[in-house]
Length: 115
Image 1 (cartoon, helix red, strand yellow):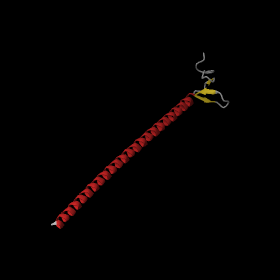
Image 2 (cartoon, rainbow, N blue to C red; image 1 turned 90 degrees about the vertical axis):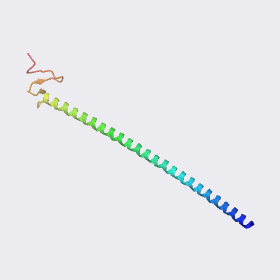
Image 3 (cartoon, helix red, strand yellow; image 1 turned 90 degrees about the horizontal axis):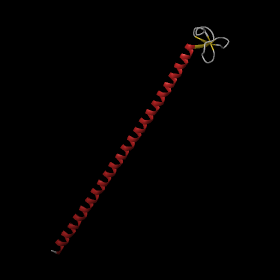
Image 4 (cartoon, rainbow, N blue to C red; image 1 turned 45 degrees about the vertical axis):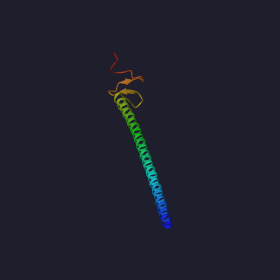
């Protein structure tokens, strides 16, 4: 009888030990799952941040490209209009497109506009 009680006590201790071990391992798995979830969320956040910043840089690059193109267009337009209105003869005199002489301010010296 004494051996039977000892055996039951031993088995009860083993069951308690194994239950504790399973509880510990379950807790460890829960911790590691939570850690993985946290790290996955962190990577997702950082990926989103990089995507946002890349988009922002792309937007700003596009804006600079647009403004550069606009300046280029306006410079070309000014050059075109200036060329349409005036030109220089062989001696460096400023002429309108019909050949009338102008001074540096664009005032007519000869031709139309004079009475």
